[in-house]
Image (cartoon, rainbow, N blue to C red; front, side):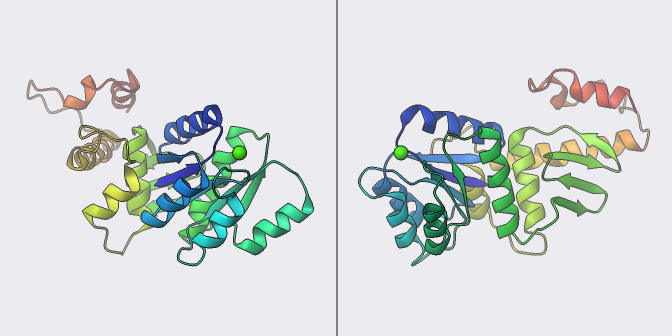
Length: 238
Ligand code: CA
């Protein structure tokens, strides 16, 4: 999932971008309304966080113009807790809003809900065979056994799960999983797909009580430096 954050306060923008990325999303930023509108119209974001008070073009105007061509879910950041602001936001086509100053966790929770709603997934849980994805907790199990994924792998699995039965092209994956600053190493899609398959099958083996094949070669994932000990531990405990 890829989101756009339009916010002119540099510190706030940076902290929102960081939080959203830590939550597993690809995220682009824009520092004024004109840049925000340009990006919002140019890319198919899964959601947009849009500040109301912006230089160049204010948030309402960005939203009004965007709604002429796109239905991208929009979460407004409003500085005032006025009823008129809320009504205006909903009338203009905002999908939700958060009043400043806000708790970042609340913004993240509302973003997740917006993205789920737009994918018409009311229940925050996906079941794909014996793989279950809890989109509220962002956890994955296979046959009831926890599967530890990186944020990027989780995003890939969630995107594929939400588009089950539909054609998902490589271009769609690139557009929704990577942001404009991703370098060539982090967007090696085949590597992420292969790692995801590996993680899911690894746990399937563990679930069945199958030990490591004694080939003398250890699976490369055990050397990956993400959550030290997790992969090994989950194998050992089953
Ligand atoms: Ca502002």
